[in-house]
Image 1: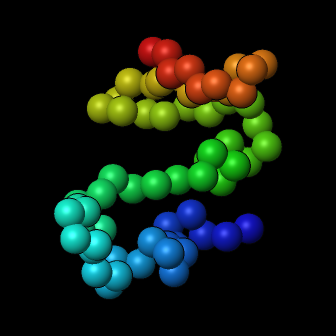
Image 2 (image 1 turned 60 degrees about the vertical axis):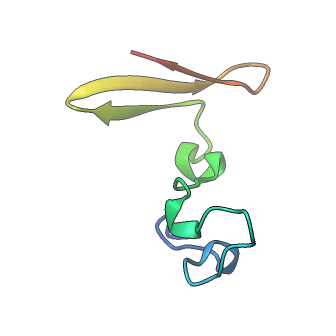
Length: 66
């Protein structure tokens, strides 16, 4: 399984930004949901000690609940 912290060449921070575009280091991290969910329908994200449930609905949408 690929390391989720490894950036693909298209995400490399060394790439210069196009005119009028933010620099890559200013962009938020981008994660593929397949990497995060690993075939499951839900996962738990712990934020400041509180669990949050992120799940994939039957229609393929994401719902985050506390």
